Image (cartoon, rainbow, N blue to C red):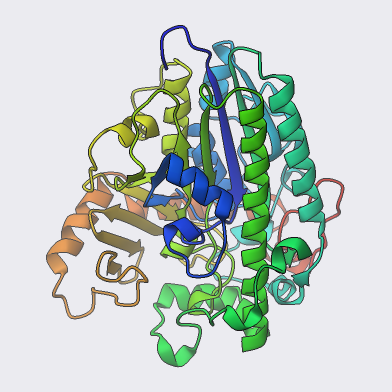
Amino acid sequence: MKPGSRRIAIVVMSDEHSGVALSCAGHPWIRTPHLDRFAAANTRFASAYTNSPICIPARASFTTGRYTHETRNWDNALPYTGQLPGWTHRLRDAGVDVTSIGKLHFRNETDDTGFTRQILPMHVVDGIGDLLGAVRDPLPVRHKTRALAEEVGIGESSYTRYDRAIAQASTQWIREHARDDGWVLFASFVAPHFPLIAPEEFASAYRLDDIPLPKLSRAADRIDHPWIAALRTCFPHDSFFDDELRRRALLSYGGLCSFMDWHFAQICQAIDESGLADEALVIYTSDHGDNMGTRALWGKSTLYEEAARVPMLLRAPGHSTRKIVGTHVSLVDVGATLLAWMGVEAPADLPGRSLVDLAQAPDDPARPVFSEYHAAGAATGAYMLRQDRWKLIHYVDMAPQLFDLVADPEERIDLVPGGRHAQVVDELTAALRRIVDPDAQDRIAKADQHALIEAHGGREAVVRRGGFGATPAPGVEAKFA
């Protein structure tokens, strides 16, 4: 920040918007014109990642600036309660107004999670969340997955109506508080999260004939890793699809990306019309991505690019940031950015760094970025390390996977079989172990989840109750199956 300037920041977060699903990131048919224009005029991080590809763990890492094995918010039944202070607490306690509008997915509205106020908040069902997702040994079959295939089409849903209300409240907040000093707004939307029902005005921009089938969607075209095979058995989404429905689902996902793009445009318009364009830090990101039918997988829950990579766009007035940044970043960097921008000191042990600083410095491809997954469908803990051109996915008690994302950006060729890249695997595994002990944390995660399940009547009772799919919008009742 320039000395004497006002300290204002606005973070816009979507839900399940894959980092590959932006036209400015090279997606061949999804249209995000407003995000593209923003990226062209400001900064886009070319490889940004979630720290866990599912809502609650990702949002806990985003808020605390710490990895999932530190927060122990392992899955969608272990929500953030404020037990570890986040950038929200530190800014609020320093006198900064920190307001959230929209989805938080914490335990409830009364826990002290650091926000000065919550407007239109969405939290977990009954303060508990998705207990079925904590059942892992053995994995259950998630029968509610049929709903993803059934709830595909054009129109309005409770989620799209909720997002419209979030956009209205967010733009109103910006306009009403434009002259105030010292505030951060977190505007958090649900799109393009399933149900894959897209408003007609955005879905109509796409033609079904222009949408290709997802890569590796046919079993004959892929060799499943055992971890992925177990995930697909738990979440048999694709068994309810045929090729036409796959294309229709992707059309709706694209329409929802465009719908989210339009909401971002509304927020940017409010910023500009309120005279904040030359003052306010603006960040756009998502909590995680979506598999979009690749490898016959839907939803999130994998460490492949579609689900693990997120958009990360930045405008930092007064700073000479580069248009496209090659340094790898993740959600834990957002908190570090906000604290630095607002002039509040961050704890020295946080792994994140200011995105503004990274965007002003030369690319550092050797900077490692870390993600992990211990939630629904995970037979064992899964860990990702992205460094240089390489991505290592380490599975406890299973063979790892290695991808060269320069030569093979679609992750079609696992380089582990044959052993020709054993040295790279060993080096990346050693770097991963400097961040986490995979086996020990896998045991801790499963012990925490077992204790949670026992506290709710045991495995049989939880499985019998079933799951409800996505957390409903405020005012809508969850339906278990």
